[in-house]
Image (cartoon, rainbow, N blue to C red):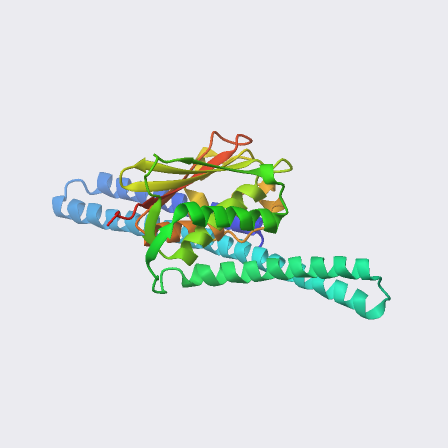
Length: 301
């Protein structure tokens, strides 16, 4: 169902529920005025009225939530379909070109590079979807993870994947000398979470990519990874919603940026599995944003 149809359905059920409530209130008031002398009937009437109103409200809320959930799933299916179909179509086009035409070695190498990049994009999308379904069900492999080393690896991978110059990603530490930045967790899951934060910041930075990553000790028991960008920003009303499964901020910006709505959901799931939390901060549209992943520090023993 198109998004406009979802909105019409929501408006219809809200209007229907409101009309039913008004009708029930009117009938109940009329019944009370006609039968005010009968106390027992009045008590049963009020109870019956309360049950009707409760049922109508719960039914309306349930229907509206289902419509919102279906809308998010439709967006996810459309996004995943696009993310899968686009690189496949590109790879096929270049393969057909190589098969049917005489291409010099330099152009052939260029085509191979493009197909390799499209293959990596395809694999990343598939991996993202699989991880979203696997997080929470698979048993985590816990070990001591040095966040300094892990974050540096994620930064190097992001620079390579997005073909960024050295100055686009800035890294700094706010940890006292001699203090460890070690957590107890699943290395693969933590890498995925940090990589998703970096990818998200880069994608929503616009033409000028300036992303800063800070590794900080928030207190004696917690370590935080803060990823700041100077991009499109996040409306205050969306700061918590962006971590929901399939959710993407409505508007033209989300339409221009490829994505499945699973990246930040995976980050939140990883944070919960490791006893931590993730939250976003932003001054609003076009003021950039900061997403912080906070994790319990491992004991020194």
